[in-house]
Length: 303
Ligand code: AMP
Image 1 (cartoon, rainbow, N blue to C red):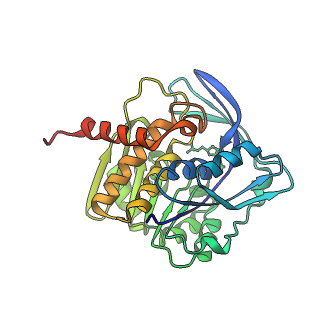
Image 2: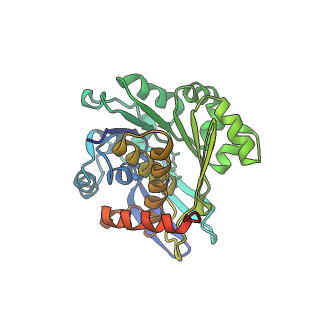
């Protein structure tokens, strides 16, 4: 039987503009992307906050994916809203508007039924709040965390305290450079591993991802897609696929970890095919497996 994964992060309504089109008020936020991606593999316990305006159909969608919403607090007021616009190359984006609303006062509280979650993923929120979630959990087996430029800059001490307890830190290449002060990704990874995490996943967008641990480096490409519609949340979906697969197999190191990283890349590759969580709304586990096999032939030079 799968372990369950507890995840805390933002739940948002996003408005997104890309060179190919736009979408308004679609389900977003790191916690939503992670949870939906991970739900293809394992039971998910979500911790987040939304306002009284949160659409019933998005709640019903997450419930239909088997996501436990007992820890999704509903507070009087408006849901967190983020508006972003991607540049022509899709790698860079500008935040056009950010309304924290009820997310600004977020104080995560775990329902008692979540305390036995074996895996926990602390998506991008203030590092002090990430630590408070860990302290509310019982006997977890694996801790993952993400962060962003703002917290590396503004809450560095809290972040360093958290990193001592993290098994897998998942960040992108510019965050790795900012956290370590090093341009070279290998040197940056070595320095970050010295800060505490047992493994470090560096996401490099369309160039794939690298996993560093004390004695190992593993590389996975991004699936070559002709059209990327919307890259929002790809990193959170990568982490969701990764943690979901680890929870499903119970193998947290070696082959289990490598397999999980490929699943992370597979789910992220589907997520970018439509706006928001559009593609994941119709995705099946069979399609996930087909693309997993396609990844194997894409990278096979041994047989
Ligand atoms: P990513 O593309 O991985 O950076 O994730 C994008 C998601 O992060 C969007 O769905 C946004 O709603 C959410 N987001 C944007 N800014 C923040 C923030 N300051 N804190 C938490 N979540 C955010």
